[in-house]
Length: 304
Length: 248
Image (tube, rainbow over all chains, first blue to last red; front, side):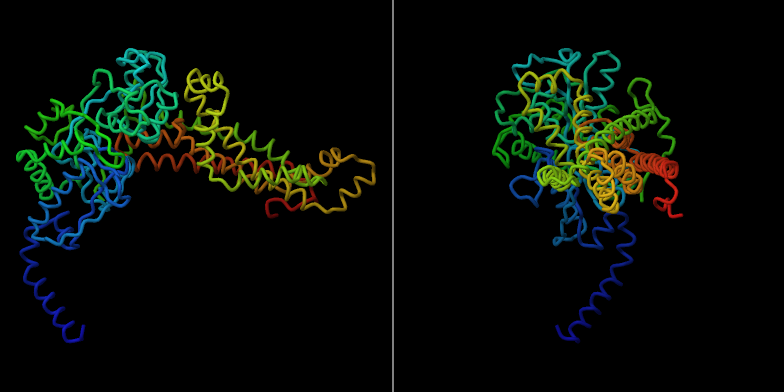
């Protein structure tokens, strides 16, 4: 590029900025402004929340049900901001880092398997719910575990920092069940504890249990049992107090719900073979999720 | 940053029984101390034995100790912990394996794994310090002890080790503090020590920064206290004229 074309480009860019700046300043604030100015959005995703947000065949590209909905939001943002070239950047989060990374601006939108609850609502805003799970048990078919009552005095594993951990501890204290509760560091390790015989059952969100089951050496040996102890609504997280951005996010998700596109996405991740092992979770849509899709809400399950 | 600070969180109910979050930190600190102290006893005993072995005039004995040090010092602590916790029990005879995995309280089996792991890992480091402590002493002392009719075990117990230990108190202090900090790996196998309780508080309350700030303060205070204690011991056991103590 010659000096004259360069200076011309700069002049045009400058003029464009000057012309559009007042209009933009009036319209855009917060996250949308940041996205418009930087031309990029950073999506938060998980590495092993099967089938919501995880690495499938490609170790740099997250996939999953939540991720597909997240991409719907990206499409809506592209239209809203008239930014067809919007760059999408990915940032992997863990259950510990997801809230601070959203808050401090590293991640603009996190869609994974994050339960919307009151404690978290003090720190971040949630989109309308994208999924609803029940907390249940995974156990070996031959273990004789049919419900939570069968776990008295037994070893039970759950993943540290989850709602299941809290529910299990409360149940243990209230009903004096004498369970030994193991808090494993992630779902994979929880399943390892179960598979290696350290724990008789694994309590977690049912959809994730089906995900773990699909990874097992012999998926037929396992079954998901027990009355759900709670229902949890997953939502996408974004920075608190950014109504303009939230409106775009909620709008995109609700549109996907209303158009029925969500059924195809559900089918793809829960009723068909999914990467990396081409296993089928065979997890039909629950009545709770059907209800959530029919009447979207950004409240937590306990607030409804 | 858009963060909702709440320093009163530690006195709020966790929702489990009548516990408040501070109770979790106290329980966690208890486990951290229990892991570190027992691990340290193993490390000190085994490390001393290995340190002596590396300096005895026998190539085979020294070779065994050297091999031990190379293995335990060159494999990451976390890898060692997973081996002790996930692999070693599977190698035990069936009844023992089942007892360890199912009859034993999970906290106990995790505790045993982490104490053995930390003890053996730190022993390799203590060994090196004991060895250098012994080797720092003039060769003439050993020769003189032989000349006076001491046997080898007597030379170690009466001449070399009492001096070597005094020399290595400062580096040993570092190892002693390290074992307290390293004990946090236990959180990764589900033992609810200080770091695990911190993470749990952060998750349950969504007040991550408060939880980690308190944990930082607890680790810092604990280690400062231990450092002062070790310095006191160093002064207490100092032999005037033998070595310079505490930089005086």
